[in-house]
Length: 193
Length: 193
DNA sequence: GAGATTCCATACGCAACAGTATTGAACGAG
DNA sequence: CTCGTTCAATACTGTTGCGTATGGAATCTC
Image (cartoon, rainbow over all chains, first blue to last red; front, side):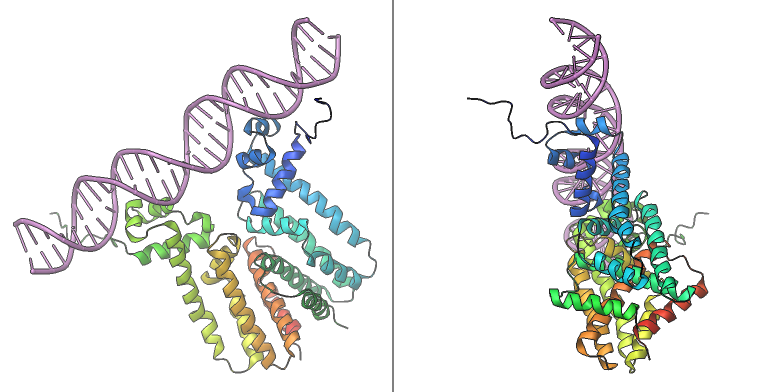
Protein backbone atom coordinates (compact mmCIF):
# COMPACT_ATOMS: atom_id res chain seq x y z
CA UNK A 1 0.00 0.00 0.00
CA UNK A 2 2.50 2.53 1.11
CA UNK A 3 4.94 3.37 -1.66
CA UNK A 4 7.56 5.30 0.17
CA UNK A 5 9.81 5.64 -2.80
CA UNK A 6 7.62 7.67 -5.15
CA UNK A 7 6.97 10.50 -2.75
CA UNK A 8 5.98 13.74 -4.44
CA UNK A 9 8.34 15.64 -2.17
CA UNK A 10 10.33 18.00 -4.37
CA UNK A 11 13.55 18.02 -2.39
CA UNK A 12 13.97 17.23 1.25
CA UNK A 13 17.44 18.78 1.24
CA UNK A 14 18.53 22.18 0.08
CA UNK A 15 21.72 23.56 -1.38
CA UNK A 16 23.13 27.08 -1.35
CA UNK A 17 21.63 27.86 -4.74
CA UNK A 18 18.15 27.15 -3.39
CA UNK A 19 18.64 29.83 -0.80
CA UNK A 20 19.92 32.23 -3.42
CA UNK A 21 16.89 31.67 -5.60
CA UNK A 22 14.55 32.14 -2.67
CA UNK A 23 16.42 35.32 -1.79
CA UNK A 24 15.96 36.71 -5.29
CA UNK A 25 12.28 35.83 -5.27
CA UNK A 26 11.74 37.56 -1.95
CA UNK A 27 13.77 40.50 -3.19
CA UNK A 28 11.64 40.88 -6.29
CA UNK A 29 8.39 40.54 -4.39
CA UNK A 30 8.98 42.51 -1.23
CA UNK A 31 12.35 44.20 -1.38
CA UNK A 32 15.65 43.61 0.34
CA UNK A 33 14.09 43.80 3.77
CA UNK A 34 12.27 40.58 2.97
CA UNK A 35 15.55 38.83 2.38
CA UNK A 36 15.61 37.78 6.01
CA UNK A 37 16.72 34.39 7.12
CA UNK A 38 13.81 33.26 9.25
CA UNK A 39 11.07 34.28 6.80
CA UNK A 40 12.98 32.61 3.98
CA UNK A 41 13.39 29.51 6.08
CA UNK A 42 9.65 29.37 6.74
CA UNK A 43 9.05 29.77 3.06
CA UNK A 44 11.42 26.97 2.23
CA UNK A 45 9.91 24.75 4.88
CA UNK A 46 13.05 24.53 6.99
CA UNK A 47 14.59 26.44 9.87
CA UNK A 48 17.58 28.69 10.33
CA UNK A 49 19.70 25.69 11.15
CA UNK A 50 19.81 24.93 7.46
CA UNK A 51 20.77 28.43 6.43
CA UNK A 52 23.73 28.79 8.71
CA UNK A 53 25.21 25.65 7.38
CA UNK A 54 25.27 27.02 3.80
CA UNK A 55 26.13 30.65 4.57
CA UNK A 56 28.08 32.30 7.36
CA UNK A 57 25.87 35.36 7.47
CA UNK A 58 22.96 37.19 5.89
CA UNK A 59 25.34 39.45 4.02
CA UNK A 60 26.95 36.46 2.37
CA UNK A 61 23.57 35.34 1.07
CA UNK A 62 22.80 38.76 -0.36
CA UNK A 63 26.24 38.89 -1.90
CA UNK A 64 25.79 35.51 -3.56
CA UNK A 65 22.26 36.28 -4.70
CA UNK A 66 23.08 39.57 -6.37
CA UNK A 67 26.14 38.11 -8.03
CA UNK A 68 23.91 35.45 -9.46
CA UNK A 69 21.52 38.14 -10.71
CA UNK A 70 24.34 40.20 -12.18
CA UNK A 71 25.70 37.22 -14.14
CA UNK A 72 22.27 36.23 -15.33
CA UNK A 73 21.37 39.77 -16.35
CA UNK A 74 24.59 40.14 -18.29
CA UNK A 75 23.93 36.91 -20.16
CA UNK A 76 20.25 37.48 -20.79
CA UNK A 77 20.18 41.17 -21.64
CA UNK A 78 23.53 42.63 -22.55
CA UNK A 79 25.15 39.76 -24.41
CA UNK A 80 22.31 39.15 -26.90
CA UNK A 81 22.15 42.86 -27.68
CA UNK A 82 25.84 43.16 -28.28
CA UNK A 83 25.36 40.95 -31.30
CA UNK A 84 23.03 43.40 -33.03
CA UNK A 85 25.15 45.11 -35.62
CA UNK A 86 23.11 48.24 -36.40
CA UNK A 87 23.49 50.60 -33.43
CA UNK A 88 20.09 52.24 -33.85
CA UNK A 89 18.42 48.89 -33.98
CA UNK A 90 20.49 47.84 -30.96
CA UNK A 91 19.14 50.70 -28.85
CA UNK A 92 15.60 50.12 -30.08
CA UNK A 93 15.90 46.49 -29.15
CA UNK A 94 17.31 47.37 -25.75
CA UNK A 95 14.43 49.68 -25.00
CA UNK A 96 11.92 47.07 -26.10
CA UNK A 97 13.67 44.40 -24.07
CA UNK A 98 13.75 46.47 -20.92
CA UNK A 99 10.29 47.93 -21.29
CA UNK A 100 8.43 44.72 -20.52
CA UNK A 101 8.26 43.71 -16.92
CA UNK A 102 10.31 40.60 -16.56
CA UNK A 103 11.87 39.10 -13.43
CA UNK A 104 15.27 40.62 -13.97
CA UNK A 105 13.83 44.14 -14.20
CA UNK A 106 11.64 43.60 -11.18
CA UNK A 107 14.75 42.64 -9.25
CA UNK A 108 16.56 45.62 -10.69
CA UNK A 109 13.82 47.90 -9.40
CA UNK A 110 13.94 46.29 -5.98
CA UNK A 111 17.71 46.77 -5.87
CA UNK A 112 17.28 50.44 -6.61
CA UNK A 113 14.98 50.78 -3.65
CA UNK A 114 17.76 49.36 -1.50
CA UNK A 115 20.42 51.61 -2.92
CA UNK A 116 21.44 52.77 0.54
CA UNK A 117 22.61 49.32 1.57
CA UNK A 118 26.36 48.80 1.56
CA UNK A 119 26.39 45.92 -0.92
CA UNK A 120 23.73 47.31 -3.24
CA UNK A 121 25.01 50.82 -3.82
CA UNK A 122 28.32 49.74 -5.36
CA UNK A 123 26.58 47.05 -7.37
CA UNK A 124 24.22 49.53 -8.96
CA UNK A 125 27.04 51.94 -9.52
CA UNK A 126 28.96 49.35 -11.50
CA UNK A 127 25.89 48.17 -13.37
CA UNK A 128 24.79 51.70 -14.25
CA UNK A 129 28.26 52.61 -15.39
CA UNK A 130 28.41 49.61 -17.72
CA UNK A 131 24.97 50.19 -19.12
CA UNK A 132 25.39 53.87 -19.74
CA UNK A 133 28.66 53.14 -21.50
CA UNK A 134 26.98 50.47 -23.55
CA UNK A 135 24.31 52.86 -24.74
CA UNK A 136 26.77 55.69 -25.21
CA UNK A 137 28.80 53.49 -27.56
CA UNK A 138 25.70 52.66 -29.55
CA UNK A 139 24.84 56.34 -29.95
CA UNK A 140 28.39 57.09 -31.01
CA UNK A 141 28.27 54.37 -33.61
CA UNK A 142 25.00 55.85 -34.77
CA UNK A 143 26.81 59.05 -35.59
CA UNK A 144 26.30 61.31 -32.59
CA UNK A 145 29.27 63.25 -31.31
CA UNK A 146 30.81 62.13 -28.03
CA UNK A 147 29.09 64.54 -25.69
CA UNK A 148 25.68 64.28 -27.27
CA UNK A 149 25.93 60.51 -27.26
CA UNK A 150 26.83 60.49 -23.57
CA UNK A 151 23.98 62.81 -22.67
CA UNK A 152 21.46 60.89 -24.66
CA UNK A 153 22.58 57.66 -23.02
CA UNK A 154 22.21 59.23 -19.59
CA UNK A 155 18.77 60.45 -20.52
CA UNK A 156 17.70 57.07 -21.82
CA UNK A 157 19.05 55.24 -18.82
CA UNK A 158 17.50 57.69 -16.37
CA UNK A 159 14.18 57.29 -18.12
CA UNK A 160 14.52 53.53 -17.87
CA UNK A 161 15.29 53.65 -14.16
CA UNK A 162 12.46 56.04 -13.51
CA UNK A 163 10.01 54.10 -15.59
CA UNK A 164 10.78 50.88 -13.81
CA UNK A 165 10.10 52.58 -10.49
CA UNK A 166 6.89 54.18 -11.68
CA UNK A 167 5.64 50.87 -13.02
CA UNK A 168 5.87 49.60 -9.49
CA UNK A 169 3.04 51.89 -8.45
CA UNK A 170 1.35 51.36 -11.80
CA UNK A 171 1.71 55.04 -12.34
CA UNK A 172 2.03 55.66 -16.01
CA UNK A 173 -1.43 54.13 -16.20
CA UNK A 174 -1.63 52.97 -19.78
CA UNK A 175 -3.39 50.39 -21.85
CA UNK A 176 -1.27 47.97 -23.79
CA UNK A 177 -1.63 49.96 -26.99
CA UNK A 178 -0.83 53.23 -25.27
CA UNK A 179 2.23 51.61 -23.86
CA UNK A 180 3.43 50.41 -27.26
CA UNK A 181 2.88 53.85 -28.64
CA UNK A 182 4.82 55.29 -25.69
CA UNK A 183 7.77 53.06 -26.46
CA UNK A 184 7.63 54.10 -30.09
CA UNK A 185 7.59 57.77 -29.13
CA UNK A 186 10.39 57.14 -26.67
CA UNK A 187 12.53 55.64 -29.40
CA UNK A 188 11.55 58.32 -31.88
CA UNK A 189 12.44 61.08 -29.46
CA UNK A 190 15.83 59.67 -28.60
CA UNK A 191 16.80 58.32 -32.00
CA UNK A 192 15.30 60.67 -34.54
CA UNK A 193 15.64 60.54 -38.30
CA UNK B 1 27.53 83.70 40.97
CA UNK B 2 25.12 81.30 39.44
CA UNK B 3 22.99 82.96 36.81
CA UNK B 4 20.38 80.39 36.20
CA UNK B 5 18.25 82.59 33.99
CA UNK B 6 20.55 83.19 31.00
CA UNK B 7 21.07 79.55 30.10
CA UNK B 8 22.13 79.02 26.47
CA UNK B 9 19.69 76.13 26.13
CA UNK B 10 17.97 76.45 22.74
CA UNK B 11 14.67 74.86 23.63
CA UNK B 12 14.07 72.54 26.47
CA UNK B 13 10.61 71.63 25.14
CA UNK B 14 9.52 70.38 21.77
CA UNK B 15 6.35 70.58 19.74
CA UNK B 16 4.92 68.24 17.12
CA UNK B 17 6.43 70.26 14.29
CA UNK B 18 9.91 69.69 15.72
CA UNK B 19 9.38 65.96 15.43
CA UNK B 20 8.11 66.36 11.89
CA UNK B 21 11.15 68.35 10.88
CA UNK B 22 13.46 65.81 12.46
CA UNK B 23 11.58 63.07 10.65
CA UNK B 24 12.06 64.76 7.30
CA UNK B 25 15.74 65.30 8.00
CA UNK B 26 16.25 61.67 8.88
CA UNK B 27 14.22 60.67 5.86
CA UNK B 28 16.38 62.75 3.55
CA UNK B 29 19.61 61.51 5.06
CA UNK B 30 18.99 57.85 5.66
CA UNK B 31 15.60 56.88 4.29
CA UNK B 32 12.32 56.00 5.85
CA UNK B 33 13.85 53.27 7.99
CA UNK B 34 15.68 56.00 9.88
CA UNK B 35 12.39 57.62 10.78
CA UNK B 36 12.28 55.56 13.95
CA UNK B 37 11.17 56.96 17.24
CA UNK B 38 14.04 56.04 19.48
CA UNK B 39 16.81 57.17 17.14
CA UNK B 40 14.98 60.44 16.52
CA UNK B 41 14.55 60.92 20.24
CA UNK B 42 18.29 60.43 20.80
CA UNK B 43 18.94 62.94 18.06
CA UNK B 44 16.58 65.47 19.60
CA UNK B 45 18.06 64.91 23.03
CA UNK B 46 14.87 63.55 24.55
CA UNK B 47 13.29 60.16 25.01
CA UNK B 48 10.32 58.33 23.62
CA UNK B 49 8.19 59.74 26.37
CA UNK B 50 8.16 63.02 24.51
CA UNK B 51 7.20 61.48 21.21
CA UNK B 52 4.22 59.55 22.46
CA UNK B 53 2.81 62.65 23.95
CA UNK B 54 2.74 64.42 20.57
CA UNK B 55 1.85 61.46 18.36
CA UNK B 56 -0.13 58.30 18.94
CA UNK B 57 2.06 56.16 16.71
CA UNK B 58 4.95 56.12 14.29
CA UNK B 59 2.59 56.05 11.37
CA UNK B 60 1.01 59.28 12.53
CA UNK B 61 4.40 60.96 12.50
CA UNK B 62 5.17 59.76 9.00
CA UNK B 63 1.74 60.87 7.87
CA UNK B 64 2.22 64.33 9.31
CA UNK B 65 5.75 64.66 7.98
CA UNK B 66 4.94 63.73 4.42
CA UNK B 67 1.89 65.96 4.41
CA UNK B 68 4.14 68.79 5.45
CA UNK B 69 6.52 67.92 2.64
CA UNK B 70 3.71 67.68 0.12
CA UNK B 71 2.37 71.11 1.04
CA UNK B 72 5.80 72.66 0.99
CA UNK B 73 6.69 71.07 -2.33
CA UNK B 74 3.48 72.27 -3.90
CA UNK B 75 4.14 75.81 -2.73
CA UNK B 76 7.83 75.89 -3.57
CA UNK B 77 7.91 74.09 -6.88
CA UNK B 78 4.56 73.80 -8.60
CA UNK B 79 2.94 77.09 -7.69
CA UNK B 80 5.78 79.36 -8.86
CA UNK B 81 5.97 77.49 -12.15
CA UNK B 82 2.27 77.74 -12.80
CA UNK B 83 2.77 81.46 -13.15
CA UNK B 84 5.12 81.12 -16.13
CA UNK B 85 3.00 81.92 -19.13
CA UNK B 86 5.06 80.43 -21.97
CA UNK B 87 4.66 76.65 -21.76
CA UNK B 88 8.07 75.87 -23.25
CA UNK B 89 9.75 78.19 -20.82
CA UNK B 90 7.67 76.64 -18.05
CA UNK B 91 8.99 73.16 -18.77
CA UNK B 92 12.52 74.45 -19.14
CA UNK B 93 12.24 76.17 -15.81
CA UNK B 94 10.80 73.03 -14.22
CA UNK B 95 13.69 70.95 -15.43
CA UNK B 96 16.20 73.50 -14.20
CA UNK B 97 14.44 73.74 -10.87
CA UNK B 98 14.35 70.02 -10.30
CA UNK B 99 17.81 69.32 -11.63
CA UNK B 100 19.65 70.86 -8.71
CA UNK B 101 19.80 68.83 -5.57
CA UNK B 102 17.73 70.63 -3.01
CA UNK B 103 16.17 69.26 0.17
CA UNK B 104 12.77 68.67 -1.34
CA UNK B 105 14.23 66.53 -4.13
CA UNK B 106 16.40 64.62 -1.72
CA UNK B 107 13.27 63.81 0.25
CA UNK B 108 11.47 62.92 -2.93
CA UNK B 109 14.20 60.45 -3.78
CA UNK B 110 14.06 58.94 -0.30
CA UNK B 111 10.31 58.56 -0.60
CA UNK B 112 10.74 56.67 -3.84
CA UNK B 113 13.02 54.22 -2.13
CA UNK B 114 10.21 53.55 0.34
CA UNK B 115 7.58 53.14 -2.32
CA UNK B 116 6.54 49.78 -0.88
CA UNK B 117 5.33 51.29 2.37
CA UNK B 118 1.58 51.68 2.72
CA UNK B 119 1.59 55.44 3.26
CA UNK B 120 4.26 56.24 0.71
CA UNK B 121 2.99 54.39 -2.33
CA UNK B 122 -0.32 56.25 -2.54
CA UNK B 123 1.43 59.53 -1.85
CA UNK B 124 3.80 59.07 -4.75
CA UNK B 125 0.99 57.90 -6.94
CA UNK B 126 -0.94 61.10 -6.31
CA UNK B 127 2.14 63.27 -6.66
CA UNK B 128 3.26 61.59 -9.87
CA UNK B 129 -0.20 61.86 -11.33
CA UNK B 130 -0.35 65.59 -10.62
CA UNK B 131 3.11 66.23 -11.97
CA UNK B 132 2.70 64.25 -15.14
CA UNK B 133 -0.56 66.06 -15.79
CA UNK B 134 1.14 69.37 -15.13
CA UNK B 135 3.81 68.65 -17.70
CA UNK B 136 1.34 67.14 -20.15
CA UNK B 137 -0.68 70.35 -20.05
CA UNK B 138 2.42 72.38 -20.74
CA UNK B 139 3.29 70.26 -23.76
CA UNK B 140 -0.25 70.54 -25.04
CA UNK B 141 -0.13 74.30 -24.72
CA UNK B 142 3.15 74.18 -26.58
CA UNK B 143 1.34 72.69 -29.55
CA UNK B 144 1.85 68.95 -29.23
CA UNK B 145 -1.12 66.70 -29.83
CA UNK B 146 -2.67 64.98 -26.82
CA UNK B 147 -0.95 61.63 -27.09
CA UNK B 148 2.47 62.99 -27.92
CA UNK B 149 2.21 65.47 -25.08
CA UNK B 150 1.28 62.72 -22.63
CA UNK B 151 4.13 60.51 -23.77
CA UNK B 152 6.66 63.27 -23.62
CA UNK B 153 5.53 64.18 -20.13
CA UNK B 154 5.89 60.56 -19.04
CA UNK B 155 9.34 60.46 -20.54
CA UNK B 156 10.40 63.68 -18.87
CA UNK B 157 9.03 62.64 -15.52
CA UNK B 158 10.58 59.18 -15.72
CA UNK B 159 13.90 60.74 -16.56
CA UNK B 160 13.55 63.04 -13.58
CA UNK B 161 12.76 60.20 -11.22
CA UNK B 162 15.61 58.10 -12.56
CA UNK B 163 18.06 60.95 -12.48
CA UNK B 164 17.26 61.75 -8.88
CA UNK B 165 17.94 58.14 -7.96
CA UNK B 166 21.15 57.96 -9.90
CA UNK B 167 22.40 61.16 -8.30
CA UNK B 168 22.12 59.35 -5.01
CA UNK B 169 24.97 57.06 -6.02
CA UNK B 170 26.68 59.90 -7.81
CA UNK B 171 26.35 57.88 -10.94
CA UNK B 172 26.07 60.20 -13.86
CA UNK B 173 29.53 61.35 -12.84
CA UNK B 174 29.75 64.79 -14.35
CA UNK B 175 31.50 68.05 -13.77
CA UNK B 176 29.38 71.10 -13.27
CA UNK B 177 29.76 72.18 -16.89
CA UNK B 178 28.96 68.73 -18.20
CA UNK B 179 25.88 68.76 -16.05
CA UNK B 180 24.69 72.10 -17.42
CA UNK B 181 25.26 70.84 -20.92
CA UNK B 182 23.32 67.71 -20.04
CA UNK B 183 20.35 69.75 -18.90
CA UNK B 184 20.52 71.81 -22.09
CA UNK B 185 20.55 68.65 -24.18
CA UNK B 186 17.75 67.23 -22.10
CA UNK B 187 15.61 70.27 -22.81
CA UNK B 188 16.60 70.36 -26.46
CA UNK B 189 15.70 66.71 -26.93
CA UNK B 190 12.31 67.02 -25.32
CA UNK B 191 11.36 70.47 -26.54
CA UNK B 192 12.85 70.85 -30.01
CA UNK B 193 12.48 73.81 -32.36
C1' DG C 1 0.33 78.78 46.26
C1' DA C 2 -2.92 74.66 45.19
C1' DG C 3 -4.22 72.29 41.40
C1' DA C 4 -4.51 71.32 36.57
C1' DT C 5 -2.03 71.06 32.27
C1' DT C 6 1.91 70.17 29.45
C1' DC C 7 5.97 67.88 28.37
C1' DC C 8 9.36 64.41 29.35
C1' DA C 9 11.89 60.28 31.90
C1' DT C 10 11.91 55.64 33.38
C1' DA C 11 10.73 51.16 33.27
C1' DC C 12 8.22 47.86 31.42
C1' DG C 13 6.25 44.07 27.89
C1' DC C 14 6.57 42.35 23.35
C1' DA C 15 7.83 40.98 18.74
C1' DA C 16 11.13 40.15 15.01
C1' DC C 17 15.31 38.87 13.53
C1' DA C 18 20.72 37.96 13.64
C1' DG C 19 23.72 34.77 15.09
C1' DT C 20 25.58 30.60 18.13
C1' DA C 21 25.70 26.05 20.07
C1' DT C 22 24.26 21.74 20.38
C1' DT C 23 21.90 17.72 19.08
C1' DG C 24 19.94 14.61 15.71
C1' DA C 25 18.67 12.20 11.38
C1' DA C 26 19.96 10.54 6.79
C1' DC C 27 23.26 8.59 3.93
C1' DG C 28 27.48 7.04 1.63
C1' DA C 29 32.16 4.85 2.31
C1' DG C 30 35.00 1.71 4.56
C1' DC D 1 27.74 -2.42 10.85
C1' DT D 2 30.09 1.59 12.07
C1' DC D 3 31.69 5.90 11.35
C1' DG D 4 32.06 10.41 9.38
C1' DT D 5 29.92 13.81 6.54
C1' DT D 6 26.03 16.57 5.28
C1' DC D 7 22.04 19.00 6.27
C1' DA D 8 18.45 20.44 9.49
C1' DA D 9 15.87 21.12 14.21
C1' DT D 10 15.91 23.07 18.70
C1' DA D 11 17.08 26.02 22.05
C1' DC D 12 19.35 29.46 23.42
C1' DT D 13 21.48 34.93 23.61
C1' DG D 14 21.51 39.71 22.13
C1' DT D 15 19.79 43.66 19.87
C1' DT D 16 16.51 46.93 18.15
C1' DG D 17 12.53 49.11 17.86
C1' DC D 18 7.23 49.73 18.89
C1' DG D 19 4.03 50.73 22.14
C1' DT D 20 2.27 51.35 27.26
C1' DA D 21 2.04 52.75 31.97
C1' DT D 22 3.21 55.67 35.29
C1' DG D 23 5.38 59.10 37.72
C1' DG D 24 7.93 63.61 37.93
C1' DA D 25 9.02 68.36 36.84
C1' DA D 26 8.01 72.73 34.90
C1' DT D 27 4.53 76.02 33.77
C1' DC D 28 0.10 78.06 33.57
C1' DT D 29 -4.46 79.22 35.94
C1' DC D 30 -7.44 80.61 39.32
